[in-house]
Length: 68
Image 1 (cartoon, one colour):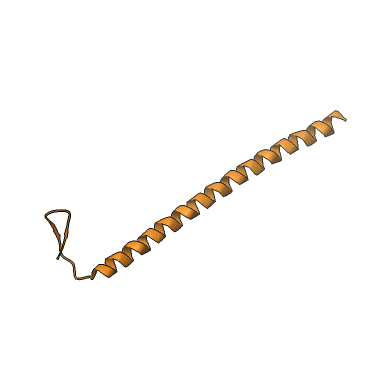
Image 2: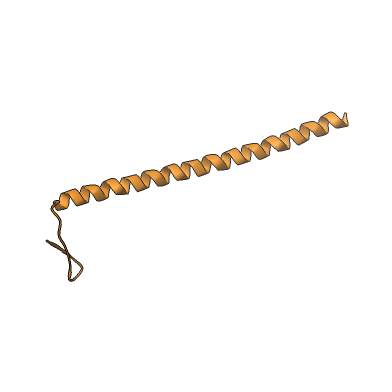
C-alpha cells in the first residue's frame, strides 16, 4: 500500500514502475496533441494571410484592368 500525502491510502496491484510508465505515456500524448494543435493554428493563420493577400492582389488587378 502506498500512502499519498497524509492519510489517503491507495491500494493497487500494479507496481510503481507501471504507474510511472503510464504517466510518461500520458505526458507524451498530451505534448503531442498540443504540438499538433499549435501546428494547425499556425497553418490556419498562414492560410488566412494567403487568402487576404489573394484578395489584395485581385483588387489591384481589377483596378488595373478597369482603369486602363
